[in-house]
Image (cartoon, rainbow, N blue to C red):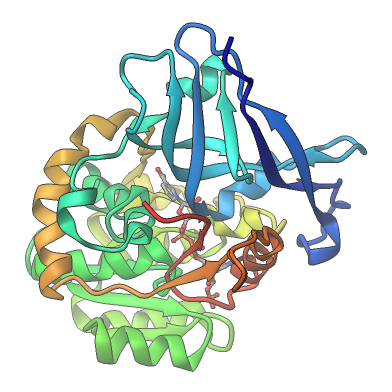
Amino acid sequence: MSPVQQYTNARVLISKIPENTAPNKSHFRTETITITAPELKENELFAKTLVISLDPWIRHTFPEGTSEAPVVGYAIARVLDSKNPKFPVGALIFGPGEWAEYNHISDPEHLADVNRYDGAIVSSGLPLSTFNGILGVPAFTVWHSLRKVADLKEGETIYISSAAGTLGQIAGQLAKRKGLRVIGSAGSQEKIDYLIDELGFDAVFNYKTQDKKQALLDAAGPKGLDIYYDLVGDETVDIALEILNPKGRVISIGTLNMHNNLPVAPIRNAEHILWKQLRFEGYTVFEFYEHFPEFWEEAVPLVKSGELKYKEHVAEARRADGSLDLQVVSESYVDLLAGKHSGKVSVHVADL
Ligand SMILES: NC(=O)c1ccc[n+]([C@@H]2O[C@H](COP(=O)([O-])OP(=O)(O)OC[C@H]3O[C@@H](n4cnc5c(N)ncnc54)[C@H](OP(=O)(O)O)[C@@H]3O)[C@@H](O)[C@H]2O)c1
């Protein structure tokens, strides 16, 4: 009998966060445990984490109870052992797992969310982290939702909230490529300058310091606003409903407001949907992953040529001596929620 292989597994735990409190570094703890390579049952996987994707929504999966629990997020990982024909040993996957170096993926719900991610990754020659952001789920969400529900028309005007975030930056660039006038909002002058100077947004206002309605009216100008691409879920939706042109659209994609424990604003202006024949539509990406290859075919060349620009922050979890420091995962996550980065935030754990 071959000896059972053992692994040293670093992982991140979280304790209960009091209500109306943004997560801070004291809510997290890192531990290192020794695990044995699992005896896999049918369909199960054992995988090594390569690059962790930090996403604002993970905040909603944090435990309600008082005991500590592992944080479950998403990552690109390499399959080390498999009893699942869809994901053989060596395959690259993107799916849910603990913020940990190794994951035994056995829960059927989690398995259903695992996606084969080899696709364009290896042949593209682009950093693995880009497949968390500009070539990953965020960009795919934007690409697909703009096609499927936003119905962009050349000459229209679109407003994107949280424009300097991962999805916002991509939405602005794709809408520009379609010939729209693009308005965004962001929380600092540095982000505003980047969106205008580097990404070609037509107008960007500071949603923290400016009156949103007036700023939006000024930015939209005489042609008005046709589409609100909502990543935030706050009271801006009421402003948008009020000022949208007839037959305008609100595309509901994100609720960043909720991730920071701020309330999602009730909609008070619903009558405009009726009188202006507006369309208010939500979109979730989960059921559309089979279109990823189509997206990669279009997006990889644009990213390689620099036509599609991106900013990302990739934190390093390896110390100089090669040991693992997963504390950077929770630290980077707290910074992400506080708006300290612009663009996708990932943590590099291991190379391809
Ligand atoms: N529907 C789907 O299928 C789908 C798929 C992927 C993601 N999403 C959702 O899309 C949203 C955006 O995701 P993302 O990855 O682009 O986020 P992100 O990159 O993490 O964006 C974070 C940025 O949002 C801004 N922000 C934070 N709170 C805000 C608030 N209350 N109002 C306005 N801006 C705020 C901050 O920048 P500032 O400095 O500018 O404030 C922060 O840097 C999230 O809600 C995410 O869950 C939806």
